[in-house]
Length: 456
Ligand code: TRP
Image (tube, rainbow, N blue to C red; front, side, top):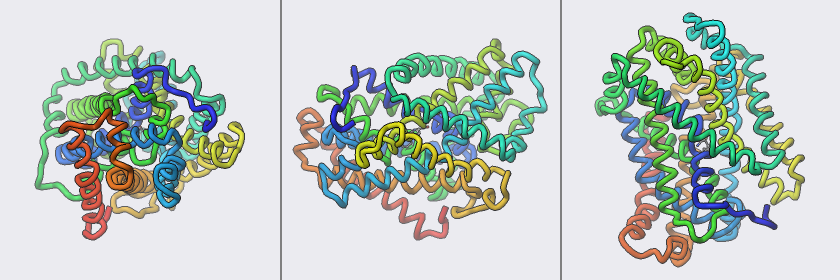
């Protein structure tokens, strides 16, 4: 990759690719489920605040580092900084491996939901089935099989080179997902208790807030926007000079946040409106996406039997565009730094990550010590622990170092140059956010958690 660096064909192509990395299970699976576990309101508010105050400026900063260095994150930090700074790149590589290892497990569930929906569409909906989600989670062999399938799919595409297929696929599948999501939104909003759902999601109840909820919001902002591990640095490194970084970052951020909010509204409306849903979801909120929607498709929605299977194909696709970008971080490093061939690098990294995935796949009830393994309070099991470790700690730390680097070590002229002259109040505002607000805000929150009793 270092010899012949490609470039994005167009501004739109770049924005769609970055949005494709950002929009994934983070929006459809994780945001609604975290919002439910954190009782809506305060979490959603801190998520939105984190997106605006930290997410947007840091995305601009990551694009900037990438375009300036024209290199992958590890090399970029060394090129623009020094050897020690490349440690931030390595932290990112570790985070990518950790996230990929459990992300594939959840992504595998979309394959199962697809097959299940196909069955319902042809043989009729079986109302008892959603309650069996707990049984599905603790079915170890099935979890491993689905994870293996999804890992294989990811490795196959990365092995062949990301190429035009996935980009073209992106351009069709993402708009299709958006359209179906909007149709589901309209259906969900006509449910009897949609108002209650909206209130639950958006009205903050400050009496219940804890620093941990705010950290969840911050971590989710990083996770959902693909920030903190250098993915956007890598994407920025293929950018030409004529693209406005702030505008591109704003588009990606708005798209990503929009999808997350729509998914949240849909699921909260369903949970409040369909009898029995609350108990099912509370029993395993981690499976919310896969439990709530089939019920809507098959009991409330005109054309739902057609859209159900299609929807989960699109979920799998959204997840695939994200797993590809994560595996690519590992593969490009082995190719660029170790001089490994692409096939070898793909096999080696995908194989190693899959071995790690098995721990997560078996931690949902199949193997009891993996399921009860706990570091963070309220997050039992390997999968939840890794998710929490990566999203709430590794990504914010990566983001913290990135802001310090861009704000205080990168030459100001470089920043000005990347931001088209860099005059005016918007540049000043961005610079203050990056130099002061972001680093102090992230640091203060992490310290509050470490020093407080509320270590989670
Ligand atoms: N943002 C993706 C999602 O919401 C996940 C993801 C892909 C990611 N690449 C990343 C998260 C890089 C952090 C860093 O599903």
